[in-house]
Length: 273
Image 1 (cartoon, rainbow, N blue to C red):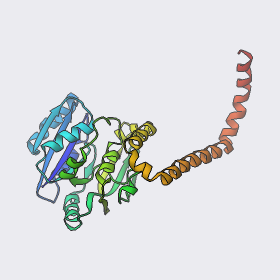
Image 2 (image 1 turned 135 degrees about the horizontal axis):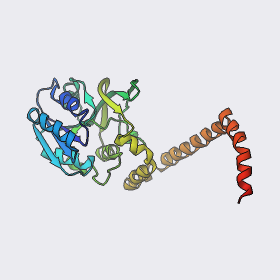
Image 3 (image 1 turned 90 degrees about the vertical axis):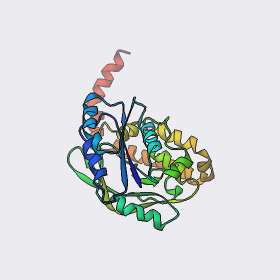
Image 4 (image 1 turned 60 degrees about the vertical axis):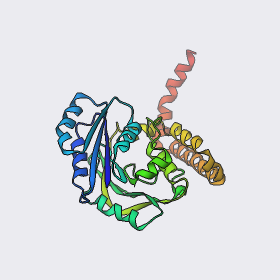
């Protein structure tokens, strides 16, 4: 059985599509659990209308996405867990194509796929994660947050970090999932659609990404110390890239023109100091 867990917080507009994409899987042995993480009245009304279609609706006060996922997974009866964000949706054949990967490959701990990134301006681009082993996940997340894994593995590594309420909890969970071996397999097909919204957890996380990265690096310092040479090289690459971009900006016509326009205003301002 595959247990599809859908945490939901104030997502009245898209939750029905997410639920239907779970219910419409061509793989028949599934259950669908929705966790209402303290949503507003509008969202609760939609969830109430959907309740008869799903296996279980769990309601709790707002505790964050990691806690909502853990709560749903604890109630899951399936051997396999698929976490689905409430504003996204799967193609009907994802589970049917993902389960055989586990059955045929004992070293696989995570199955993901390619995805359509749906931008707010209507444009669509394809994201192709690479998957791989822990070495592929140390410096960035190379899988979709909504990927398939075994409930047993979730238990073994301690579930999602409930203190991470501001994002990157998927990445940190995958590090622990793969830390002691195993790999992530990517189905080379677009079987998922992800909405790139300005108010999404991922968008907000990118604003404070250095704080979140610091938390992950310190929490898992043992693997970064072991990989110290590559860790240092990665940090220096980022610094070099930032310096290069800064140099390009300083040479642009817009920047130089702006400096000339602002020069007399800066002079006047200096007279009043």
